[in-house]
Image (cartoon, rainbow, N blue to C red; front, side, top):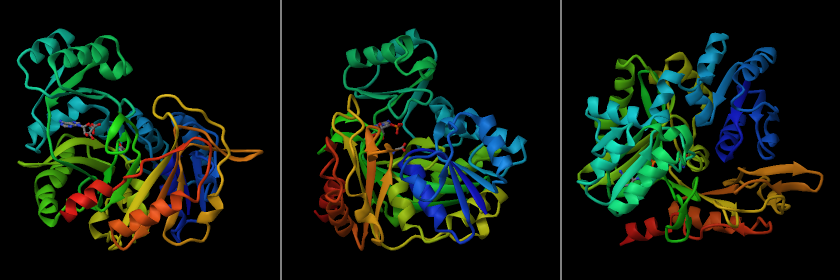
Length: 426
Ligand code: AMP
Ligand code: GLY
């Protein structure tokens, strides 16, 4: 079987690696891919938003299944273009990817179908948003409606901050057209957990839980990033929480989308907050998380291609989905200065240390092959993942492997999974 993967980050590297483990697959293409993905796949120089070109490539090369890793092409309707050409593709159509593409849509869906989430109001008029803030409780959360590279969420502690936030989102268009509408919602407190799931339109099967560390600095300080590291499973995701979410969140979301004529096929990523009043939805994404995929997929036992195909064919109910009873930690190696300003082009040393080492992985996010070797080519450069029998062992293994890699201005957090482990031990 021939598989085409769309995307170029650490998430797509993890997907490509997992697809390469399938006995069914004899050829993988990745567009556009990166230097790490090139170990398993033939990288094709077509951008993720060039839908017609990608579909033409898939036809020409008799690709059996295309897997879309990234949010932008999904929200832009890549799946509809592939389906129109008669191509098999894993991922939601445009009318379903809106679950991630519009926060206002997601909030209205949850309200209509009684799925627990923070109280909110949607606004498309900045004057009305500003007036609403006058009587609001603080802190309060402002969200640009559309995709904003994970940066369109502002947590505001004072009225003045919130007013400035509305101005930057809706008037100054800091996040572009994403800020034509916005959601203002109640601030929630609790533990955050990410749960990824496979969905075939009707049936949903969840993967093991994970947690991301979004802030740039140790101890959750500094700016928000795309994610500085993850661990899986979350010790706070108990059987009780899982039971509640199955009944009140997961299946109801899939049923709600189907009832709206927007049957969802692909990955639903549930960003959850475990509040004192029970689990609530922070956000939905329509794809694997990055770097959540880098801890979840190494723990997955099932052949991922079987699961992708079951989603496309609507046979997920009959498909087993199994995970190892172990733990994984992923530490992101970034370029010093990320997410603001950083240099690129430094040679990466030590990648060979991961060859033939069971339970250790190095997933490339921003790297490039040059005549001098593989060099840094982005803010997030690599994700180093290690497995272990429990979180503590996985963390120790991951940090040991972090030292195998060297490049100028290497920067990483030292506490991925640490505070959680300590809190749990108390
Ligand atoms: P989102 O992109 O919606 O997941 O938001 C990014 C981050 O902002 C989340 O991971 C949370 O840490 C935080 N956040 C979002 N919404 C809320 C909320 N209603 N209350 C507290 N924190 C929030
Ligand atoms: N790591 C968060 C995300 O992929 O959205």
